[in-house]
Amino acid sequence: MGKIRLRSWFLRTLDSIDQINERLDIIESFVSDDMHHFINEIISKLHTLPEICHLLIRLQKESMTQSHWQRLYKGLTQAASLCQLVESLELPVFQNNEQFFGILNSETSMRFNQIANEIETTIDLKSHSIYVRDDYDPQLFQIRNNYSKLDSLLTDVAKKLMNAL
Image (tube, one colour):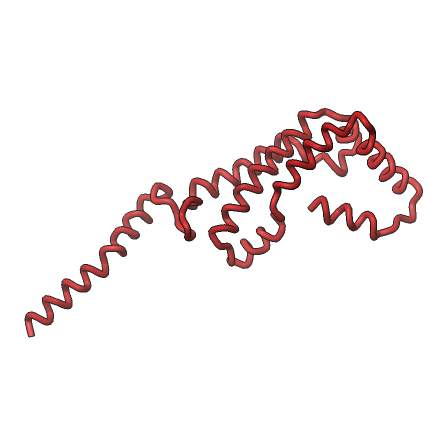
């Protein structure tokens, strides 16, 4: 998402000198020598993030595959880690620009972790297909067991009917 925003900044010209100066101040903060270590750490975290917006669109369209669920889970945990990192840095560029970086905080991190935890406790992420975990719902587990035995039950009934004829 940051890549998209940065691109839009470059492509969309501003007509307000205050907005231009605000953007220049943010960019100046990021390119200063004392920020290189922090920026490299943030960039390394950003490189590992999947495009969560595309995954959420797939989720809305109900077209998620197992690999999409895995990427969404991984992306949410990494986004939570990024939020914690940005908040822990306590750098003026983040604190003085709440409208851009205010969402990167411990509350957002906690929400990302909660959603990731729900995914992990509901879906078996190690399976090769989308599979609701057996321990998620006892009733679902029982129905699944009954369904798996249905084929042999129907075969037995068919054999009995054939023998009766």
